[in-house]
Image (tube, rainbow, N blue to C red; front, side, top):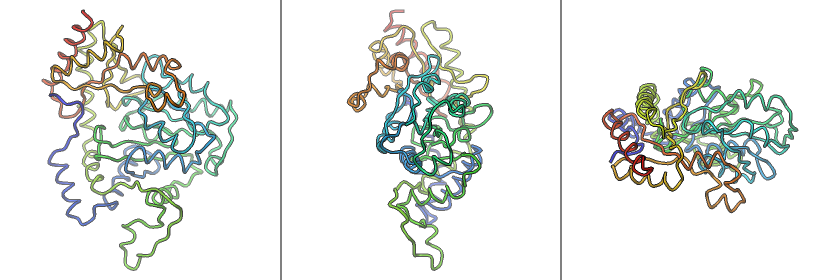
Amino acid sequence: MIPFSPPRIDQAVIDEVTAALQSGWITTGPRTKRFEKEITAYCGSKTTIAVSAWTTGMEVLLRWWGIGPGDEVILPAYTYCASANVVLHTGATPVLVDCDPTDFNLSIEAVAAAITPRTKVIMPVDIGGLPCDYAALYEIIEAKKYIFEAHSTAQEKLGRILIAADAAHSFGALYNNQRVGSLADITVFSFHAVKNLTTAEGGAITFNLPNHFDHEEIYKTFNMKILHGQSKDALAKTQKGAWRYDVLEPGFKCNMTDIQAAIGLVELDRYQENLDRRREIFRQYELAFSKKSWALLPTYSTGFKESSYHLYQLRIQNCTEAQRDAIIQAIFDHDVAVNVHFQPLPLLTAYKQLGYQIQDYPNAYSHYAAEISLPVYYDLNDAQVQTVITAVCTSVEMILNL
């Protein structure tokens, strides 16, 4: 079986994790701090805090921003449930919008139409690794053709809707030659096991707020918030006579460990070769599937955007959801693992019960019903890529009687 997206765990990773284990420091420590600094340098952001997961990072961020009952957060219907779950955890309302007809990202026009005086955050999601149109989003919010009601000190200081990007897929992607992580006001990355850059589990928040925000103070605040509200972390308490600490607020527990950061440091050091290999796999898929009339190819590069090549989201033209599912089963029968990204939120029981209806998001449904995500990872060799291509073509043409 050709797997879908295994992590790249080789001797370099094993050696660095072993070194972390033998160092005597396995929780948040020097490797985590170095990882944060290297992410800041790589992305071009103002500061970075490493966390245990995208989900915990985004929830702490939303709560720090003052998001709560009565507030609205705009995000796409076409995303993983985590994007909306964290909004619900705060008591706020996820306002779902349809995706663009041409790609999997949210529709800028739908975002503009969804803004109300309750809107506090727009959460664009870079589906598959392709950046959303950040300039267009900023045009909307900076035009101020809406009423903005600040309900927290941070909101009042910004004076407009916050753009907090879900960049779980797009570490390393480019928009106008700037890396994701320096585009939105705040960006949250995922380093889950299947992501381009992994720390097994984990994530990071990069901050790029206007200059009148004190980013050094923000970093200190988040260090406190992600460790139970303690005034000092474990590393700081190891200094001579520095055992005493205070708890400044009832915080969260979602810090990254040095074991996770050890993996991330190796991954980041060789990340460009990862991107280069993923790009080459995309090009091999494009070369093969561009010859097929039934294939709708994903957008991964434009005049001003370049994907992180996280997901190759092939769509099958004139294909029903049932046919797509049969094609997937046929591909698995060829010992090739594929996936679907994603089931739009209104298809999920939890969101149906909240009143969301898939018919309100026709682009999201049509994209989903025909979508198959193909394997893309560094260790996928050219012979395996050709096996995937053969399995897909054979299965599509068998199911659709082509």
